[in-house]
Amino acid sequence: MVEKKCCPLCHQVGENVPNIAVRHLVLEDLIKKVIDKENYYVCINENCNVVYYSSNNKNTFYEKHVKVPVWFKKRANPKYICYCNDVTEEQIIDAVLNNDAKNMKDIIRLTGAMKNGQCELNNPLGKCCSPVILETLKKALDSK
Ligand SMILES: [Zn+2]
Image 1 (cartoon, rainbow, N blue to C red):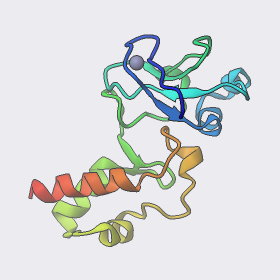
Image 2 (cartoon, rainbow, N blue to C red; image 1 turned 120 degrees about the vertical axis):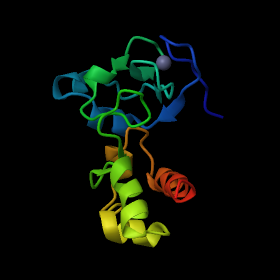
Image 3 (cartoon, helix red, strand yellow; image 1 turned 180 degrees about the vertical axis):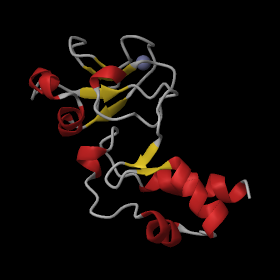
Image 4 (cartoon, helix red, strand yellow; image 1 turned 45 degrees about the vertical axis):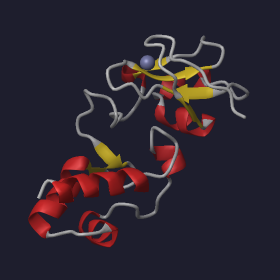
């Protein structure tokens, strides 16, 4: 069992994130602050400025400390869904509404999403973007 831990700022329970994703996404001069043996968490509260925090609470990274806009935060602009290929929520919705995409295969063909995926490094959650692409696709299809 992995220990759950709350965000030091908003006190919501966050998700575990691989150390390697934190190291890859914080600004260059902060990389040395990411500690090898520490457990890191990501705050998924869209209104909270904190992105990553550690189990010892000494190592908190805010949105301004992260290289990319974090899609599930309210202020994220653009909202990247697939970070490996810079595909945004807007491009996926556009593929559905204007180019008749109906499934994942169409989305991949039209947007270039999920090619050469290295989600563990590029996605702020440190995991594959495909569930979020699918969710965005469904939302766009429902809105048609
Ligand atoms: Zn938070």
